Length: 324
Image (tube, rainbow, N blue to C red; front, side):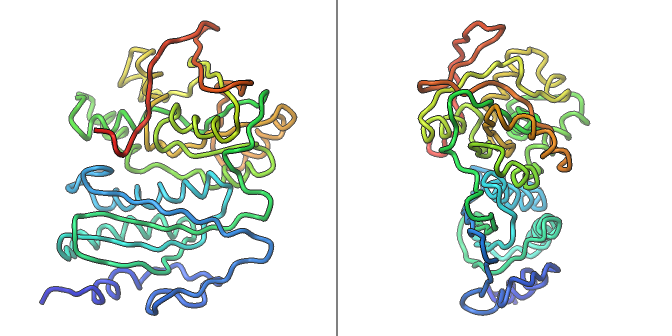
């Protein structure tokens, strides 16, 4: 007999090891009952991943689960929030229990690492898609937003940029790589990004604005510039590129363009006032995450790119979910 919705929920989603004290009632009723700490705002974000758009249907389900949860947790990181709970709506063409078992391994491994409890959701029949809503806490008045950048602030990114786009080009067969170890590393970095949660929390009261890089640096930085009413200048020679990306793309200009346009990086892009730069390194020291200064916020509007102090005319865009 095929499993019904309630069998699947009981078998795969009610067995999570994480049991948080702020969860009064989780899966099994019409709603979860949750406690919010005094003095905190509740940060909430919802994202969907659709087979054929965000991942291939035949992709490793553990990697798909990791990508789905990591991308949502990255939104909390961008706000400086500590993660707490997640709900999951899973749509499947049929109840594939082998796929579900592997999906849950990847999902719960990352959830348990960050002490995130699954508190509800839904399963239904249809084209394969995953919708998550994550919840986290941030002290009142300390949330990082997109609207606080000021002219004179310094522009930073965490980690390296461009690896996700390189990995995706291999997954889609757009590029080939004879070095199997290199190809495996880049593909892994596309699917298994690490949300910068500790870094985001460390940036509270240091960064003036922040977001995560999901649609590409040039596209996402534009949100900060628009919301803050400022311009920015990026020195492309300061972009942090991994050794693996440089090996994959020896042409430096092309590697830099990948770094500027690569989506699904889930690194943080943030601005820091001059008076807070000295505290930045200390704040990030315990996180194990590097931050690289790539430019500065200016008066005006729009983004300019420079190399050796000379302007560049690179016409770059980020990922657009509705582009043909």
